[in-house]
Structures are given as structure tokens and as C-alpha cells.
Image 1 (cartoon, rainbow, N blue to C red):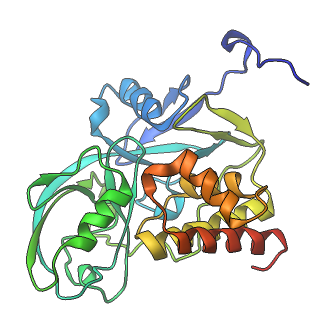
Image 2: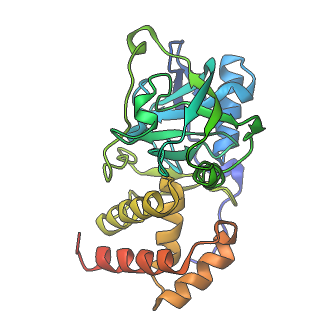
Length: 289
């Protein structure tokens, strides 16, 4: 206790197996500390430009948003990389304030559709599917934007007008063609990790090997992720996990708000959202699920 971590040369090697989701030989990757570096390693393994990798799923080649790779990878998980496929341009008439989209991002500059609400404006447009990357809105490039920025732009589009979405869908394997999914059920978050533990990827600082989340942490992350979708139109288990980590030892909502401002100030969370996050963490602590 109190000793510094061992130098990189003495740390255990973590090797993961990976394939391209539409079909490829199996590759081996190691030596990454965040999602962007992970995509780079996958690109090297399959001799692709790194920008071609859209997102990854764990233990399935399908576009399954419940298995989306976020901030944690089980040490025995198999990684499937989804690469860019067909590009498309779609005109959408915004007949209602809510389009029915939930947005997430890949942690490396691409925002994409994680869920489409049944019966919504977008649900009636068959060309738009879960997994589509949103490249531009009305000609404005969104490459490099975070999910919350894209969700805000979509929300601010005026009702009663038509707008244009430029999208790229993930390249599909033969058995995935013509499949269109509305995304995962609310609250059915990914089962993170198998076996010995998980590799926690961080946007700042080195990756760390951790035990699987406790029952409290899993439930708190799920509830906070639901709040992110309700308030902001995004889902992000890594962000939710960070918020739970920041909030689990705070004594009141003001302390939580201060910690969120210091670590996640770019999001500008509203006060009522912070209060609900505080309540969700507290409920999970005492087993009120």
C-alpha cells in the first residue's frame, strides 16, 4: 500500500481478440489505454484507416446497442469492430418537437443513433436505423462533436420544417442485411465484462484493471444512464459510471454539483438533473430499485 504502480514493462499483458463485424479473420490487439487508441490498434490489425472504425460491440457481430463497447471491456470479451458502410442523405419533416432519437458517441469523434422510439417521427423513416452515424445536419459537419452536442442541435431544429441528415451506416454482414432495430429496451444496459474483471478505459489517464461493478454500482449506473436519456437524449454508460464514481461518497447534492462542474463542466448539467442523479445514487445505495 502506498507504493507507485509498476512500470509498464512489468504490468501484465492484456491481449484481446477482435474481428470486423461484417466478417474477417481474427486479430489480436493490445497496448491501448483509451477508446481512440483501441480503434487505432484495430485499424492496424486489419490494415484500415483508423477513421473507418465507427464503433465496437462485445461478443456479438450484430448492431446490438446493449452490447456496445463503452468505458469497460471484460478481460475475456471478444471485440467486434463495425466499419463504415453505405452513406445516405435523408430529408426529415419535423412534425413534432421530439424526433424519437437517442444519441451516443464512440469516444473518438463520431456520434450515432443508439435508439429509435417506436411510433416516433424517425421510426416512420425506414432509411434511418440504429447504428447510423450522423455526419451532418443541414450541411453542418458533426465530425468531432459529442453526443450531447448533436442531441441539442436536433432538439433546436424548428418544428414544422424539413431538415437534412447525412448518415453513414455500419457495413453489414450478409445475415444482417435488411435488419432494422429500434435499439435496446430502456434500462437493459450492457452486461459489462466476464471472467476475471474488466479493463476500464478512461478519456484522461491510463486504463486500469478493475473488479466487476458491484450490484449497487450496476444499478446506479443504469439509473443515471436513464436520466441522461430523459434529460439530454443521450445514453453513455461510461459517463454514467463516472458520475456514480463522483457521487457515491458525496454528502449532499451541492457537493455532487461541485464535483460534476469540476470534472464534467462542459456538459452544463441543469440543477434538477443533478438533484435527480443524487437521488438515483442514493436509491441504489439503499436498494430502492
